[in-house]
Structures are given as C-alpha cells and as structure tokens.
Image (cartoon, rainbow, N blue to C red; front, top):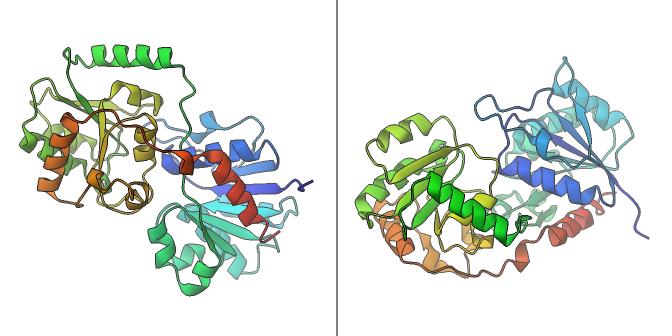
Length: 346
C-alpha cells in the first residue's frame, strides 16, 4: 500500500484567480488520500473583488494562517516542525520566502517543490528541489539544472457539477438579464482586468469587426483596468460588463463562443473551461495557449494584432458548437503525476 504523505502547500496572495482555484482543487483531491495543510496569509480577501480562496477549500484541508508577525515566521515554523513530508509552494511571494529560508539554513531538511504558475525566477525558485511546469514554454526556459529536476504537468478542468437543466436555466436567466435578443450570439471573454489580458485591444477589435446587430460581447471579471475599459466601451450597448463572478465556469453556458486576447497567458485555464463547455474558441498564440490548441491552429491568432483579433471575432460569430477532447486535462491524472513527482524527493 502506498504510504500516506503529509503535504504542506504554501500560498501568499489576497485574491481568488486561476492559481487559487488550481490549489483549492488540487488540495481537495489530495486530501482524499493524504494529510494536507495549507499555509495562507492572515487575510486572504481581495479588497477589490471580495474573492477569497477560503470559501473554496475542502473541509479536510487543514488551514494554517500567518499571525501578526507575518508570513515568513509562520513559514519558518512550519518548515522546521517535522510535521510535513513535502512542501509545495505556489507563486513568487511564498516561493521566494522558502528559498530565502533554505539559503539561510533556516528551513530544516524537508524537500521543497513549486508549481510555476508564471515565469521562472531564480530568486524565487532557485533553491527548490523540483519544479512543476504547467506549460512547455516554462520548461524550455529553465536553466539546465532546474530543467532536469522538473516535470511538465498541465492544469486541468473539472466538468461542471451542475445538471444540464440547471445550466440551461442559468443560460436563459443570464441572457434575459443581459437583454440578448432572440437568436443573438454571445461571445464571452473573462479574466482579471489587467494590461496583460489585453481587453483594450479586444474592444478595439470588436468595434472594427462590425458584427451583426444582435451579437454581444460579454466581459466577465474585474481589476484595475476595468474603469478604462468601460470608458472605451461607452455608448456601446453591445458590450456588457458583468463584474467579478463566482459562478465560472457554469456561466459559460450562457455563451455561444469564447475569446482570449491576452498578450501572454501562462497556461490558459479559462480557455480550457470554455472548451469543456463545448464552445468554439479563438485565442492569441501566447504562452500555454499554444499547448492547449496545438491540434487546432485554426483557433489561434497572432498576439497583439488588431487585424487578427478582428478576424477571429468574425469567425466566432458564425462558428458552431465544438466538442473537444479533454482527456488530457483531467484532475485525477494530474494529481497522480504530482504525487509521483513528490515521491522523487520523499
């Protein structure tokens, strides 16, 4: 019988986005077979959106929060406690602190791995024993030593838990709320509204595409760029902003197609969710998107190109639903590979 592992996940963020969802889902499936602890900041609520990983965690996952002294002392205490067989860090803040403690000789002897949710930085990840890359571009960019100690394990998508009837009801309700005309096509886009996501270019392309009167662009999310984006869309009732939503990916049932205009996308989880929902998609050939759509080059457009994005919108307007092979992106297979990676070190 395979031994039960004591796993410590470390994350220091105040939001709920793709990485936080990834960790909530991974820790939940690991907790079925292992003892899982998650070290978080004292406060994890996003002050802008109210998003918080706490509401998405499995009850079997033990949560430890940093105290008044901050994340670093709490992290040092956990690393030296002897209570964990493996430490798994996520994103730069937690990872850099683990690396600092290890270099200072203050981390004990517990093995440490990280998932690269963004780019590799030696300061954050250079002292780790192993690295999980979620996309091939990350692994290709690693220094030789780190590449030899890495594994390529893509993110996953989880099929909607809601019934077909519930999704149909949500579709009807949301399209009524958005005042979509009968027969109208809804093209969706979603993500944190920051410069990297390139939603400003999407609005420019939408204006230039001159689609049918009943076609709508629905933009889901919030962030520092939202005010400027709404200003750019002023006077355009065909562009709808929903704000931050907690019901993705179920909300995808209300869409007819999906577009990802990002300048760079480390992986592309929302794209994967749109494909799980059977939507035709268009995405810029940037980062992990190229892995996901490697077998569907017709769905890729050049990054940061107004003309390419405009043509992509025009294609989406008339595209039919599409059934995608999602077998590569199931959480059970990914969790098994992560566990096998852990066992290299413990």
